[in-house]
Image (cartoon, rainbow, N blue to C red; front, side, top):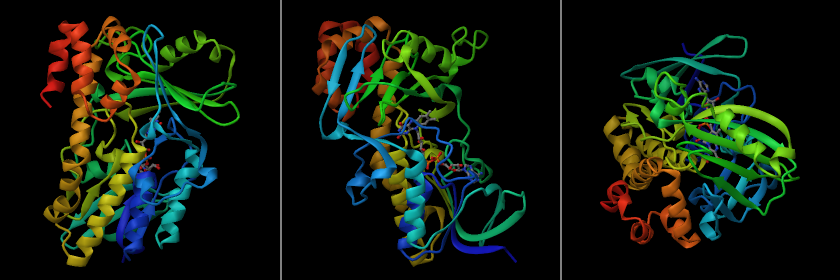
Length: 406
Ligand SMILES: Cc1cc2nc3c(=O)[nH]c(=O)nc-3n(C[C@H](O)[C@H](O)[C@H](O)COP(=O)(O)OP(=O)(O)OC[C@H]3O[C@@H](n4cnc5c(N)ncnc54)[C@H](O)[C@@H]3O)c2cc1C
């Protein structure tokens, strides 16, 4: 006899898991969520930037305590210090307080009837014809057996349970950015997120400054993890994200005088999503499925969006009593791949083109493109900006050709 019996068990109470739980519970399903963190949302391992996401537009109103400040655009800076300012509806957003944001999402799910357990680590899983058994250890390492008709893996980068169920969640170094971030103060800003590019600044990545209230700022970096492996395996000597970030900070007029309040490191997928999101009775959502933007490593919006899609699919699956992988594929995976998936494919090509550019090429691009051009690129409208870049530097044709082929 299991300790808990439920319709759906969710592993992970990040944005993906809690969003799934909220919508699925709203459809009347019994949902139980486990998270290994002692406190939902804490510790934070995130730059905390969130754009005006579709999921938000669809009716979620962020309570004031869940974000630090509103953002009115972005400042993108090239290797020579060229600044491009982006301001339009699509560059608006928030720098969150994820500690409160994630907890708020979990509370919304609880409000709809889901049950959430913090400090419960899922460590094993078995599936049979009638259901799924998940094994979780609580804070005292006491094991509980959970029996469910469906399991949702919303485990983020680790994705242990999804891997045990046969999903290919192992990461290649080349497809991961390794990151480091400080919270710093004081930093004067203009409510713009700031992104700094250049091979000397952040090889295959960028430095971000995401401003917060009270002159605080998240100052972070992501670089290609394959470059950060030292000399022996083809990496750059001594390349760790912290080394690059510290170099950036001592060269910045404001930051070199600022104090640090928090330090942490982390990793994020910037490669392809995994090649299957579903199996019988199982769906993988959010960063566990590598549903992350390959250009900037943002995954909060994608995680929430997948949570909504998968919950709608789960509701239909229970209604039809069909939890087969084909049903889940048609109602979740196929929907994702034909919408967001297409966008992510283009952005992955763009990432691969960008990473092969020298600083000289990057300078040419920054000198050539306007804010509107960069916004067009971010929206996937590449033809005009590419034509402008090629006019002044036809030698980039080889690198940019894959983008022109769509
Ligand atoms: C340094 C850094 C900066 C980032 N900055 C941004 C940013 O500014 N904007 C943005 O949009 N994205 C950013 N991201 C990415 C973003 O944090 C993730 O994409 C997002 O959190 C994904 O949400 P999720 O719900 O899929 O997974 P997560 O938020 O990772 O949640 C997964 C949850 O599962 C739990 N879990 C894992 N394994 C188990 C287990 N076995 N048992 C129980 N619980 C488990 C974890 O404790 C966690 O709470 C950043 C990532 C990093 C590393």
